[in-house]
Image (cartoon, rainbow, N blue to C red; front, side, top):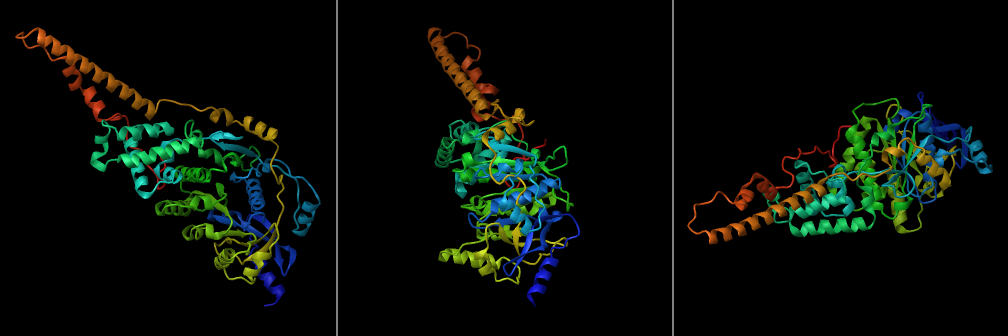
Length: 519
């Protein structure tokens, strides 16, 4: 096949009839062909994707480019801003020689444009509307991943959640969970789990120590109320463009286990709440999962199975998920198999491990007219190898692509502008202030205090009765003593048996262990 016919065949694979996002122009034999555009069908964005490449190759700009066009087509977008350089999507880009040259190369009509954006932060750490979750909603599976518990400890944590759910003990924040764990290994609490395996003091100690270390890292801020409603991510602006939700994470980038797991909670929460919609002409939301390798590092087999199932099934609810990472090897094969759209930036081959990763990456692509092993090492910044799903669901030919330039600001907005955007949001008053209402900690503390008072009263009454008997031997048998009345009362038996009996019914939980709620 001649060079020109090969290029024509590749370009023909991207000539879609329906709405599509423009990624850039075809690269062939070192030449950019602006008349041959590489695109991705809008309807296929819920078939998930992968944006990969070495550091500095342009992954962030690629997801910014895709997010802009999704917003312009009325599709809401979620972006995790790990390094703090995505906030510029809210402001028009800055014109310059480099931008003009790139636009000319790829036949792009570049117009500086800002897009409607909301900025969030985990628990209010850093700039953004605070995003919080209750411990009950977060669930035992995700929390075990954050606390780095082993399988036995994870099962025990699941038992603790089961008990709290069935007894109506709401785990709003970490002190609630600590209170329930401490109660279940106390003399009064041990009988509660005896019939279903119990909780060893050793395992409880591990969990409590992990919670303490977790709190010392500042994690207490992330759990509490008001709990964030993830349906806020599905909004569109008054002009019909999709709102870009940017989660600002620079302040917590040294806590990768936390923010990567929190992102998974957001995705699982959306999965729980959204109805089945089948195939749509455009997604309801596209969710970009940056630094995806952090989610999978050290993950247990059940955790990975839950991720795979969520990714597989959330497509039918109209949500697309793009994982952003360095190499496809960072993503487990079962998850990678669900990612139909691929944008692969340059890879390095400086070490034997790099070379091995390069070969493995090449094997994940369809048959190509390119020598991918060579091509992937010499792509420039802002260039990538692309293959997507066509409108019929078949993979398109592999295309080396010079990508378009984002129209929004390629860098962060200044701190004052970001703060003004956050505090000017209609959502800010709803979520800004934390609320600490009565939950498991307060209920257990109150019940424990009542039990102690009852025990003290019983002891005092018994002593008084003993003295009375000594002073009045032979007197008629008195009525039941106060101690007997207290110890025999239903209240005391209830306190001795459980702190939460009949307070509520068990919460239904999803495949990820997150609480299923009606909003």
